[in-house]
Image 1 (cartoon, rainbow, N blue to C red):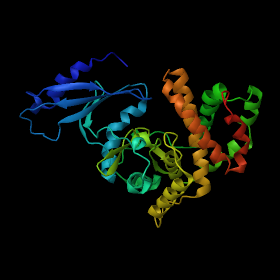
Image 2 (image 1 turned 135 degrees about the vertical axis):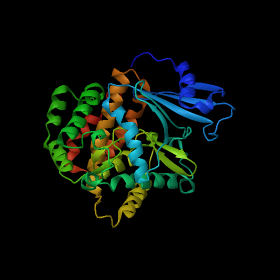
Image 3 (image 1 turned 30 degrees about the horizontal axis):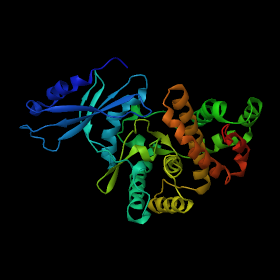
Image 4 (image 1 turned 90 degrees about the vertical axis):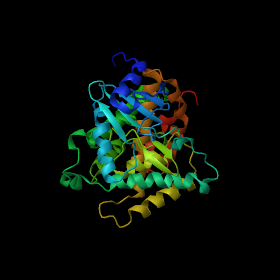
Length: 343
């Protein structure tokens, strides 16, 4: 990404919002995670502004190498049309790739206290699942009929190619660096028919709109509800993939009982929806695919991108994948790959 001076955001913001002409604007860079997007919080001091609700706002600057970044703005408008809770966009500079958007605060679902479960966290996870259902009810057929749908900004759908990519990502960035198995054994397991069967089965099921990265760090807590963020990778896929991303989230330690409770809650939400059918077997298979992708991502970001904190999530992701494979006999051949070198 070209060099950018964050100090210029004050003047850029005054140019976009004339009512801020006399306001003090403080720019605070925010910590970055695994993306090529930079975020800044703007605190706006007293002025004669006509927008008292904008005491603070966020500015996102995105890179141009990942085409999905250009999808954030049009997808935000589409999500609002579906009633999905996501940030408001106040301005967009297409030349500088700057987006001024609603400041949702600092509270992530991943940081919500786990106890007492029934007095807070449970309802927050249920709120997140209700937002997901609004997405999942959009099928490829209904999307095609919606004249306002931003077709050109969706990422390629989950198909055989994408599921195979997730498996390759896992082998190249996790197995090759962290697994205790030798290269010959890893290659033999990579050719196991259970993996190709998984790919073929998941790719054959009718698809719905999915977030693609529906995990607790992409869900903000606002008041008593939840807002979705980082949805620029949205595409058509299986609802179970989003569900597995949240319930087998390596950033959160879930008990089996709470995972089961939320799985049943989701099933109740979609009960009677003709376009949705969620099965436990498919949920587990999506969880296997998602966790392979996550482990590949942690290895890639931690080793190749130098973001070492991502390596801290590997043990829980491994434990989650082990638990999933224990329920899928057809994929039990993958289990040896999860014995890590330092275990």
